[in-house]
Amino acid sequence: MLSIIYYLGLSAVGYFALTVFLFMLESRIPAVGFYARLLASYAALVACSWFGVIASILLRLFGNVRLAQWATARSFKYVMRFATGVTFQIDDPNNYLNTTRPAVILGNHQTELDVLALGWIFPKYCSVSAKKSLKNVPFLGWYMSLSGTVFIDRANSSSARQAMAGAADEITKEKQNVWIFPEGTRSYAKEPMLLPFKKGAFHLAVQAGVPIIPVVIGNYSDVLYVQGRRFKAGEIPVKVLKPIETKNLTAADVEDLTRDTRELMLRELVAITSKARGRPMAMPAQNTGDGVIKASGSEATITS
Image (cartoon, rainbow, N blue to C red; front, side, top):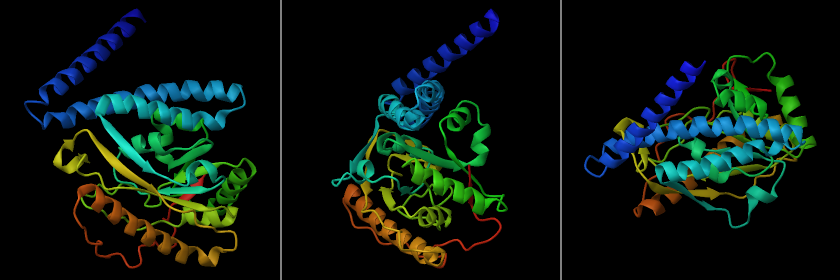
């Protein structure tokens, strides 16, 4: 056992030393910064996931488990800000994130760095949604399970309606917000764009009769662009849009609601990215119909 601890400690020291060395080398070889921040990010993710597991257990014992994801998100915010120099500028003048509850919060999904964005944006009494496969990931998956994450199972449509009803009941009863990425996967886009939206989040909001809060994160390929091996310090703009009410809507309205919300978010995405980069940007061409994924057996479904 002591030998295992010794080698784990030695590996951790080596990992830390390599990360520091790469950061020191960045001033001479800028491209090295990609790998330095990548290593720092993974270390921060593991450390904050451990913190999240402990926080979830303690907060559950004290009856406040619904604060666990907020507490963990904030820890990641401060650790990653120090480790990578990446920050987010949140524009929410009406404080919608902290005063609208329960609600379904929607955000665009670009890269793994969106985890850090959640650290800055995430309000209290909110849980994330995530694909079910993450449930089995060490550290991160354990934390997600303990802290009440809503998992998405793209392959299982048989229990979709029952699971949706359970999630709707929970968020209304507990006044719990849910954060969902309606694109369902990361876009890795170099320019501002959105993938087609899945309708699960909109069905959930309509069934629960709660508002949708669109949150738009500016395109940040100038800060992180995986294909170009670019990862540097920088500030990323975020705009919180006015909540969209769903109380008088039915399942028949979901497709229009999905399309209209996507168009609203896409326009704002282009606008805030243009402002951040100091140059006008055109709306991306629509190559996917109306940007809504049609209902099918493979459509993302929400499971608890």
